[in-house]
Image (tube, rainbow, N blue to C red; front, side, top):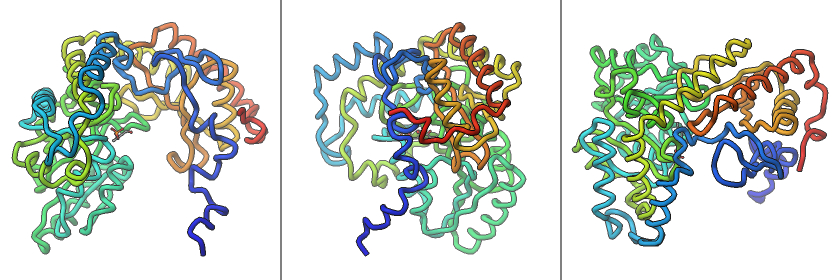
Length: 416
Ligand SMILES: Cc1ncc(COP(=O)(O)O)c(C=O)c1O
């Protein structure tokens, strides 16, 4: 059989709807300056889909720093991987600043969070080791673990009793193999906005011998008194042995970093295949990240504004009877009951009739029969945006409850 033959039959869990969804529900084009209002399908919409938490994407100082760095360095420098010919004092300096900010001894830059996480996991564990991880772990954690030759034990999302049971099992296993245990959780779960139970997990360190890796992609810059993340927010930053943050969200850039004790970071520098065998992060990304970090540290008003919007949006939606799950972060999921027709109709109605653009998440990311609309508040939203959105959602809910969205065919709904 030609390996392409199977494509005729099945395009994958998300790709199977491509014909009806491409360009609208999937791969939509948001145009114009990154802001609370952008152009979609030829019209201005109120956008709640960007992880531009602190509004840094289009901050004038950020734009200036990015442009100046690109003019000064170009996008090529430094050429080569860090280990061979891609090292600069700026990369090193940024790593130290990031590490200091999150209260760790050392840091190391990653070209992309996703690849970085895969490689962190891959380089830290060998076949004797056991990974214990949360069932709702991000794809980058899952893919990192797929490369692991040893045992992987999963616990149901945030279920500490089950985690403890798995730790008991893991301990028995490593007593035989002579390996160690790595526990992996997220700080903020990016889909539903609830927090990893870092406090309870850290408590278990008193009883079990393990190292803790926290993916704080959504927590870095948004959570904690200084923005140093979910560990800071929950008072257990010191218990995180391997802290991971990305520039793709609150930092509104690209790249990521890992931080921890110097020996572990040095080990990663010499063993992470994603960094050893890939070109170094280009200079504008590094210089741009300095500026973003500076603003994150020196302009607490950005985070305060973010949380004003978060609190207004979440309390307003809850008052109207919406189910927001267990979010404790800026990530604002709104759960409805319904299938694919309801999901597409609700999204389309919001976009076309209310000019509100938010992301839609369906099975298999959420259980069958559940629709999740996900809103990401940012510091560039206004309280008027919040009020308008809550009233739009209320209208939608009335129609949904009246069964208005359950009949129309997906194909009919699709705009190209
Ligand atoms: C929880 C989590 N981890 C890792 C990543 C990957 O980060 P990056 O976009 O830098 O590759 C993301 C981003 O989608 C994320 O949400």
